[in-house]
Length: 332
Ligand SMILES: *Cc1c(COP(=O)(O)O)cnc(C)c1O
Image (cartoon, rainbow, N blue to C red; front, top):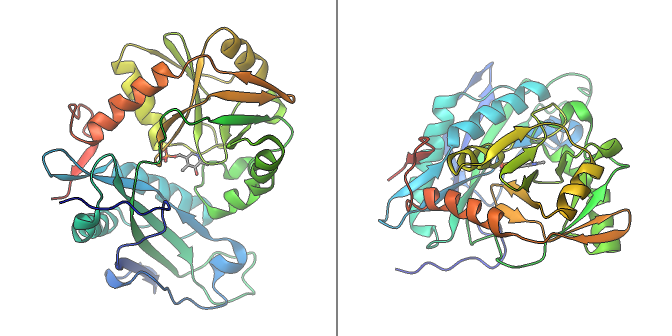
């Protein structure tokens, strides 16, 4: 059976979603409700004071018909970390994972054939209907999960031009590892400016020359046989894909170096033939084709290594290579 891929990424949802409420100081049993609408108080804390965070992960249909999720517990752990920093109630691992599994089971028939996936979007919001709580956390919350059949976000050979931004930051430095909508709102002016003024797909945020990440993906340089990327700090989002790429690269014989590096170093490495990649769940790896640094465009000479590492990961996801690290959770 061939299943069509929706034209716009993330525009179509499975009919129902699991909703888990936090009230009376505890998480309530899962309820299933239509996913087109959500009723929350107009005064909800999330809408006024930004007590919101989300996750993004995928389920796949493998070659033999099996449906699997990729590293869901890593995403659950990251949302628990986001919740802690936002002072939202921390979702419970087991209920959360069960809801994900049940959702993927129910939506399994809607997953387009490879290289496509079911994109899962857990969202946690503070729902206290009290607009006077600007300086206090929400005591109630909702966790709900959208499931969206998606095609391959990765377009082989399409240009990925990155604007190197050394003046502005993506978000407040202490919020970097929180996966929250507020950080996207914060990055928006620079992302739009990069598009309008340079035709750049993304902005690489490098405050004072320190190479961090783009608005929605992590950044790794492939310098010969070495992968170079910033060590995990509070300032940026700790991507599951970043971790998977570093692990798979080690398996492939690369050296992995997590260290701070500057735009000057990046420029030298690229001029000397290094590759650069963006990593994130949607596209897995997007090899960079050029950088705009100080108004000058610099081409990246090759995308071969990044593309090969990408294939090593998607092969695990689609069941074409061994899942050595136990990343897949079988759903049905
Ligand atoms: C989600 C996200 C990433 C990528 O994380 P993955 O877990 O690899 O999908 C990177 N940067 C930001 C800002 C993000 O929001």
